[in-house]
Image (cartoon, rainbow, N blue to C red):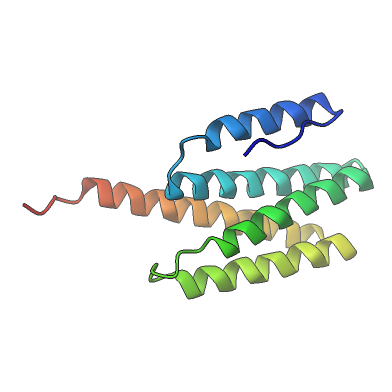
Length: 136
């Protein structure tokens, strides 16, 4: 799925890079890419707030919110963690909306760290699965 390019060269390069990473990714890899994109969007929002750039802040929060919504909708119902993941993504989406309405730096920083923690947990689970002895 190619995204339309924008007049902003940095945004255009970011989208091209994202499209390249998405191409051929499996579900787990795609989830990882989306989680990374949320973390990056929240970091961009934080930086924009520090610069008092309301337009970039809103754009970055909108980007994060859209990705979180996609993650929530894509949760595999056969995953034993599906209810927990949906609840997490739903709460995160609400927090992004709250931050958009009234900026709260602590909430933003905490939310970003929550997504980093989810990525770390997924990485640990993948490593454990990869190192587990295979059944014959």
